[in-house]
Amino acid sequence: MMKSTKTLEKHIVGENVIGYTLREDGLYYPDLELPEGTHYNIGKYGLMRCEYLEKHHRGEYIRLLLDGKLNEHLHKVDEECHTRMEQLVEQMKAGAGITEELKATDQMKWVGMMNNVRNAAEEVVITELVYA
Image (tube, rainbow, N blue to C red; front, side, top):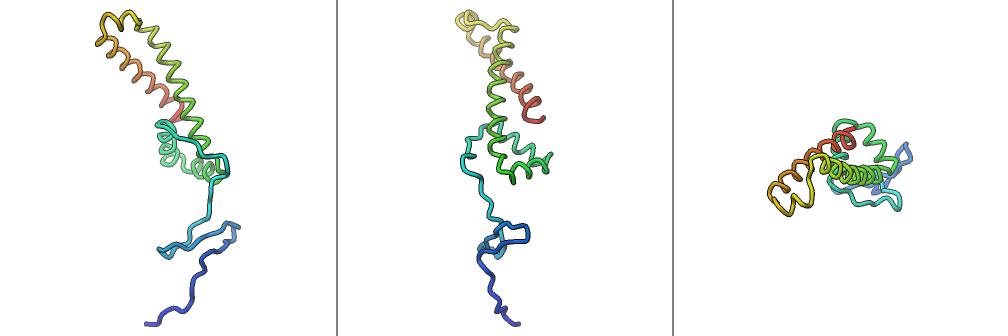
């Protein structure tokens, strides 16, 4: 068996004008980086949105990724979800009669009702904003 004398270049530029770097596994990987200023903290809802896009809307996921806008999109979705959660919880609390007086007089009932309100609000938020 003859050994190949051809050595692979460490960096190449493909026909698509994207640079590629040779890694230890012998494969070339694209040299893609996020543009400056696009590093945002992504919370629970942003991560859920990312997973949803990756599994169910692959084209949109890849477009956002290649445009360098995925991180920003996930951050915005996460912020919108938190804002909407706060609004819904307040509205649902008022509708369910959850008050500070109830909290002071029957804390266990208050905790149970608040948990129900938060869970219901989260279901709405996930349906409306994460899986939309």
